Length: 294
Image (cartoon, one colour):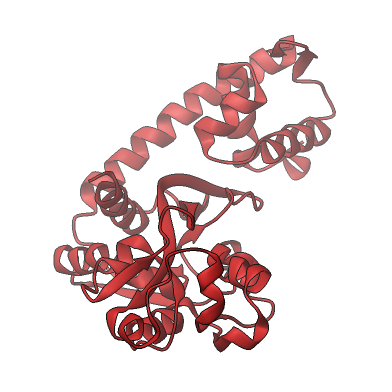
């Protein structure tokens, strides 16, 4: 049986279902998508060639075989948690590298967290990878990801909700002095706009809005990075979208029709289950969550 046996993560996921009784509550506790939980259970039952759960309308209950397995799993889980606590307590001198990936427009928001982490753990080399492409955490391309948009549900990723962020359209006061301040949606037809390049816009809501509602002849600058769009706005090249938290860093920016044009997006902390409990990841994750809570 050992050669065919699933990895410990299968048992851990199934154990959480046994404790909580439903796929949804287990997925929420583990920070993964419910489809991942179902896949893990099916894989475990196939590996053991036995049923571990009775499925019914109210949820999942253990079979007799499942109860025997999870009784042993509970003891193993307690031992692993105790070992993890001991390692975390002993690991007071973190070292090595920590790879954080996010999109370029988030660096202004994450900078205070990165600065504090570097002060507290100067022996850790923090590397920030700014890329619109989603790097593969399961392939070791990064250890932590900060993502915006729908909840990530790839494989064995653990997604924790950090916050909801607001975005809007902004323009520099020099641009408004030159072109005038739009007072209605119809007056936007008289202005220059900043948007993204093809293939990038669908992931950025304010770029998508500009492409849908503004004539192509009015879009005088297209970028492939949100940070470049921010710089273009700050340099008075046109009206463009920006996160409101970032816009507050530039006193000379003015919101454009903030009541009519406002977008919200969720921000997620994403890790892979194999790295989630490592001391470096936990140290950074705690600072990140504290920052967004405050």
